[in-house]
Amino acid sequence: MSQRALGRLINVTPAADGVWIALKGAAAGVTFSCYLGGAAGDTYTLQEAKDNSGTGAQNLANVAEYWTNTGNASDAWTRRTQAAAATVVTAAAATQNAMVCEVEGTSLSDGYKYVKLTSTGAGTVTAIQRDLGVQRAPAMLPATGV
View (spheres, rainbow, N blue to C red):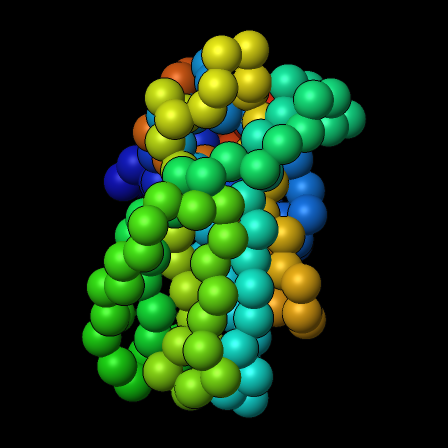
């Protein structure tokens, strides 16, 4: 049997819009995968907190690079850059329906262990914890917000 990624390399929260995701100690980083169809555009805001209840929540001005495409496997990712900010604004264009950005655990402020990405529109957000600190069978993975 081959080794699977879930539990070894990644842990996933498919419905992560506005959900606190553990980083320090749990994973080296998190990749946020977002989607809002219909060429509507969206604004995503990144925040950090000290715990999963949002203690000390503040914007994390960390996103200087993100990637966009249509989200339907018909095109390659387009790299986009901006001055480091806590928000990513996707344009009202089909080529920006999907957006991916990454946050490294080392970019959090001292004492902060959780991050969340929130859509101001109707966009979906999936959080993929990567480079897990401890590898486990999928059934033994802790909840990503604990």
